[in-house]
Length: 119
Image 1: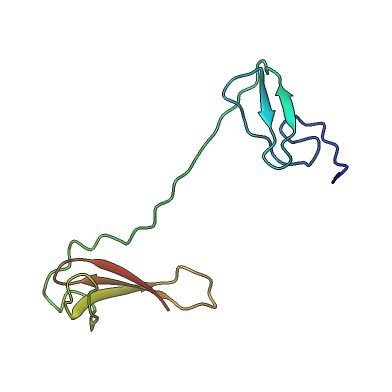
Image 2: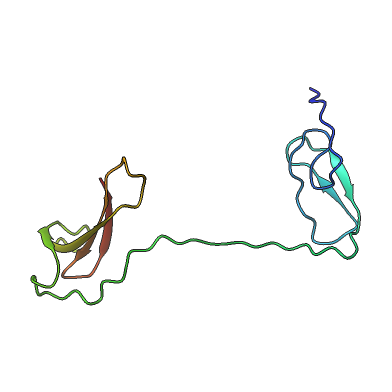
């Protein structure tokens, strides 16, 4: 199957147009992961090549200040999946688009286990 794609850029496969992986050293040979065509990578002089990777981690806000005092925060009847306690502090936040429900963050008053409920 021929896609008849022509690429004049060394970063893309000349056969299928897929992005070619960046080799750790040059000169080298890179194999396209889509069509398995091999391409020669030449050394690039006076060109900065870098990679930036961001790692995002889903967390729940720290709630260390929550104590067993029920008047401190909003407290509701919620069964903790970890210890079985029936009361939890909660807060809500709009984490998705406006036409979807709010996200509810529960924190068990006994063991401080945190749970998220998408409503």
